[in-house]
Image (cartoon, rainbow, N blue to C red):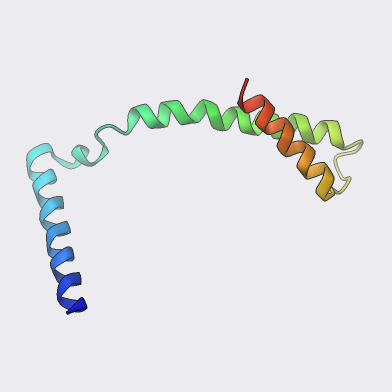
Length: 84
């Protein structure tokens, strides 16, 4: 019973893929992806910026190990920069 259901789902997925490809072409699979990519990219840039700032505040030298408390402080800096 489960195998039959999985085969049916696979058949429906293949049919959906063929339908999109025939009507919209290969670029139809990426329709609507520009807005999320453009919106998420600055958020990741802010996260990396916050991590670098927090890391520089915690370390005297670049080779100093980070403790758990240091990482929690860096996380706090990242979240603060992210919500500005």
